[in-house]
Image (cartoon, rainbow over all chains, first blue to last red; front, side, top):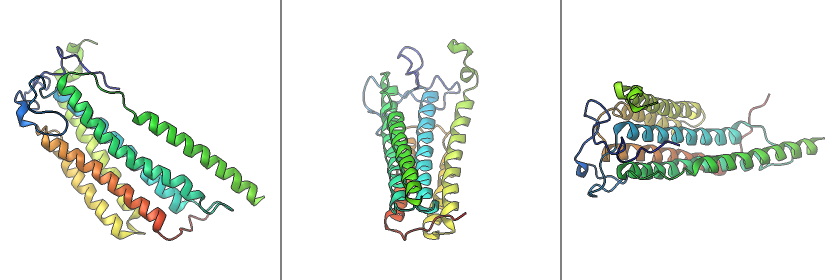
Length: 156
Length: 104
């Protein structure tokens, strides 16, 4: 998780972190977006490096979400059916697709919250996505193993 | 490491480059997905390929100083696009014909 700088260091250096002064701005009222209150007196455009790092984190989660959707789709479309378990592929693939959708939505809200925290110099919330991802993949893996064993027993 | 030793203090352009590369990887991910399903379902593959071109183009703006609303809208587009793709995948999975799967 990215460490938030304190307000006296880099977190609220409006336009100073980039070196060339073109990425940040001292005029916070220009930036009216859901990532932070633009008219708050104690908020300012954060250091561009932290904004870009936050954006890269969001994009990485988006790619993870897309990979989950592709994996779910591939399991349903390409995997041979489990003998004796006609809905086996759907049981494995559908949660992965739903997880991909959830990761895309949650990562956007986490980006918004992190951006707001950066503006205000507050600590960022701990991301819930790693736990959600790990738990879901573990459960899907266990279900897949159980299905493989069941279909193997059914075949023999 | 003290702040003065941070490479980004002396060369802040690397952060922008990394972000642009991240956008490019995201566009490639969309293109790979669109290309993969283009053959079997062109009506779903062509929009995703078009979306990858749009994302690549938006990535070129990532290093620009347009923070705030522009950045927020670009990222919202990504979130909506991934959610839309997952809903299409869900519909194909649950409502589409029963696939035979790959045979060895």
